[in-house]
Image (cartoon, rainbow, N blue to C red; front, side, top):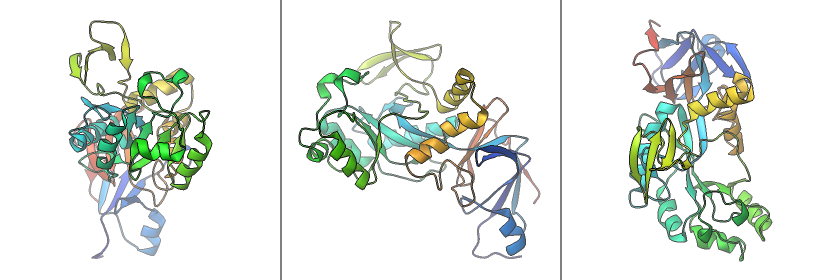
Length: 332
């Protein structure tokens, strides 16, 4: 039958899907970029799928969501301030090869002028062939504890002496910010947290599974000039060049999920939900991201039995395949 104003219906078959915290043997149906209920298609609309895709026994999981990533593929979001949009685009595209369908570009503790220059230029945007969805910016610092500063430069760490005015003076416009890390024990933190919540900015005191990746993520083995530093990628780790001093994470999310499962002995469901449902829930977007429920965005990944990434899909469209044409299209 003709469906002049309705989109193409896709049926993903020969697969298992992660839904409702269980792995189920069930087909996945997609239309207009969202996951749909096949019963309504069959019984209410009385139509068949336009496209059937044989997933070859793969596991379909919601796409990974990385809420703390400082850069990658040679880009540092807090350093490359003169080519912000190009940097975001490069990282967004590269993340598709890691199964990440949504992310929060993260700015670490920096001078105020960096925030004023960068924040207005990192816009929230939908994902697609061009790259993963940008959910909003995660600002990590400078309102943190100097006693728990990690790699953050101490001379840029600030106090909330003037309450929320200190926040506005530091960052300027918060329209593109979706997550805010601060130390709750510092003076005036509680009223600042309350105001951030009123603005629907999620406050982080600690996170679920994240990469915390630096700009060296995705680069080949060897020495690279990144910002002010020479970094050496050696045996899957990033070191300050010529030393054995680690300088940050270059673990991609797919590898993090596998390592998390192996290191903790948790179930496949628990490992996958740590990188899908839980980050979505932390941002308050778990009604349409991080899940495969009916009505959710059709952002998902196909995985093999070892949780190795096979392909990445955004809005029901394939945006990355490890082996081209591995998901076979059948006659509908």
